[in-house]
Length: 248
Image (cartoon, rainbow, N blue to C red; front, side, top):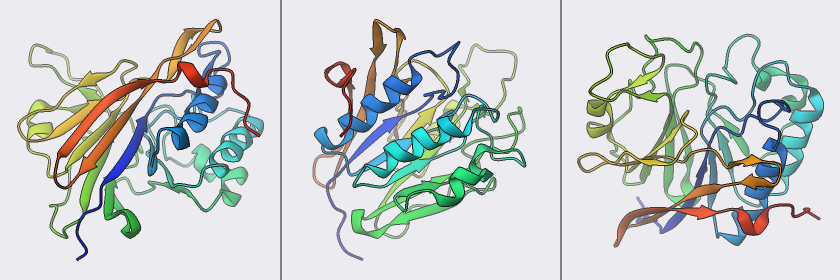
């Protein structure tokens, strides 16, 4: 196997496109993400669930998303979450996605699958969410990291704190994170950024890129540096410099 390359991931989640009432700045925030990716030197864009708010959003919203993704020169990867489930009504089965751009990749297997990017010496693993329920364990079945590439896992679900009594849907427990075999765990579902690294596993919720209001429409993305010599580092990078920009 070739040695691992130094790569940079752009990790985000919970854009909720199509919810013009509850998330009125979703389209502007997603556009800022796309504009920022090449400027940040990203090698791959990870969209970890709830890209869309529900399965009833219009085709125009889907076409907006696909058009912007097609402008990227790097792969973009979607893990379906609880708002954009990969079930029989899934957005990702609708007509616009039949002609998706070749750089867009979607997890479709609820039992888990690997998407490989040999040019980046990178494997991604994730479980497409079929049902948002307590019995769905987002990290169940993660394979060992045995082929010499980077292994990054994507998971959309609720991190269960030790003090929580009621079981939430799609739970992720501390032992799930600490026992993960991946080099980095990209999490979605929480709107806020949280570093959840445990043991030797680097893990984080990216938080949403959406700002709180039309006058403050963007927040940040998580930029993940994977270096075979220096290890893995990640940081939040503000999207403020790209708010309101128009793509050519």
